[in-house]
Amino acid sequence: MMRSIPFYSLLLSVLICFSCQQKDTQPAPTPVDTTVQQEETAPEPVAPQPALTYRFIKQKEWQQQKDSLGGAKRLDILTLLNRVDTTHLKRLDSIIIPSDFSLPLQYYSPFPEQVEQLKDVNKIIFFSYPTQVFAAYENGSLILTGPTNMGKKSSPTPRGLFFTNWKSKKSTSTVNASWILKWNFNVHNKLGVGFHEYALPGYPISHSCMRLLGADAEFLYNWAEQWILKNDREIEAYGTPVIIFGTYPFGKEKPWYQLVEDPNALVITKDSLNAVIQPHLETILDRQQHRAAVISNRQSKVSNQAEAGNGQ
Image: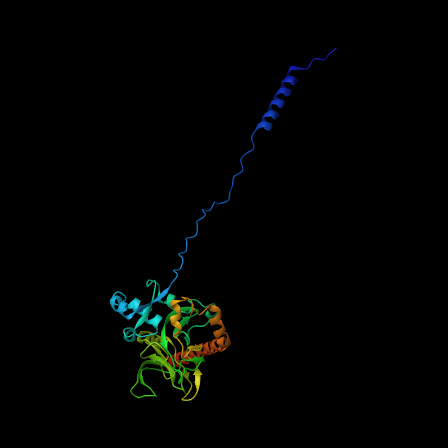
């Protein structure tokens, strides 16, 4: 005999079963992504550096085009490529011109624009004998470059590490009193060697000095630092370092003529310039640090003297 189930118990069982089914069928909540989505921006494309080429222009063609090749920027490029001043540029039978005149001057120079090894060197000047080009750097960045005509075969420019000594806006050559040297900055006091403005015919011709265009000589005159003397005979602190390096092929074709066949023929790579710098780097940094200390001490003395004077 079956026992009857109370009505209320049956109703309660049905409700519990229905509630469990609802919980089982309820969809799981969608997880919220709390990370911030950053828009990815594509890097700006870098314009490729134009490939420069060079060619000769004969005198006849040069005469026809010289007006269109004028202008300060183009003349700077032409004087650099041909290692001449503007007066001698007009006298050349043929000149080297680039395929593109629109680039900054440093693109036509054999020197690199950046030299990591020089990042701690405040100022330095290089003169390359084989390329007849100079370069000035500030903390490894090229700030000025241009043509130079250095010592001829019978009176070569000495090579190695030097420092700027004294300077004169206008001085007379010790070789010939009629030679007036403007913006003259001495680097070897005993030999009388320095860099200055003078005629640039387009090959090594000087009596050991480094000839420069007027604007370049004036810039270096104001930019480089003089020595600091303790007395008439002793140097207390050295000036700006100057490195003269390389060998010129006297008796052979001018090296820059090679640019017509190979635009990279004269490139001074970072590695090759580092090899020139490395033997002198410790001396350069030591003397730079010593100069800073000398200047600081002198400024302190002046300040102390001023304060002592004000206290009287």
